[in-house]
Picture 1 (cartoon, rainbow, N blue to C red):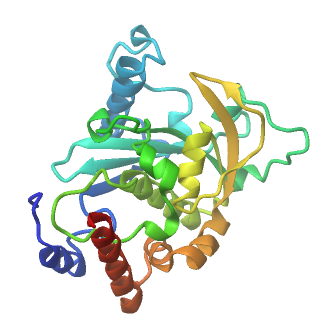
Picture 2 (cartoon, rainbow, N blue to C red; picture 1 turned 90 degrees about the vertical axis):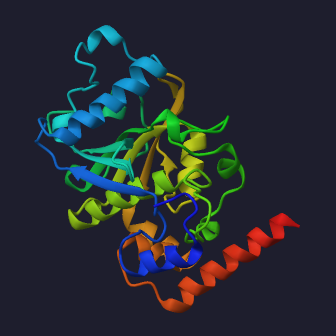
Length: 279
């Protein structure tokens, strides 16, 4: 697909199922737990090495002689990856479901409030190793998760609408993040996972709240390669919130048929905002 694909052609490709409605420039894959030898995981581990070891220097290069960053939680995780249309891996995240004998990753560096009661382990996973390749963090101020400073400050659920076609805009809103979270959301709904933990910066938690995932702090902020706070989100509440604030996004997350009036209304609203911004 060229960067100048027309709005009409985009519509046709969406209706034919050749393009995703909200993430037309990305593809997503997952690897289930217990398969550490797949080609997909090798790509994921190399991307993690590139970001965590080479770029950010969070982890020592010498600890990963093969150029792949791995740890003891990979075997008990379901891994998700985002790809550009040319097949290049550009983002990854994992959902960790440790054995009863293991802690969750966040427990190794975060404490929880004394009053917090942890939900059942078989209904809970931890969102971990969420990163976006540097090539898709193009603007100054973009977070490691690919979220622009503009979206962190001004973004909102109701503003997330289908791509209108025209000039390629894979960086205008956190669509990579949105796509990865949709994959995790669908997997969780299919497998009875109702709660997600995550240790992250407060700004990332606010950004996730703006796409429907209202993470709540469960412990104090601590320093772990920068300030992070342990959070939890109730996955069941995400759909309810999206139904109120963005019905199109709610249907998209759940792979439901999007009512035509809602789809058209979203496009009209988007064109209105773009026209207003040009004035």
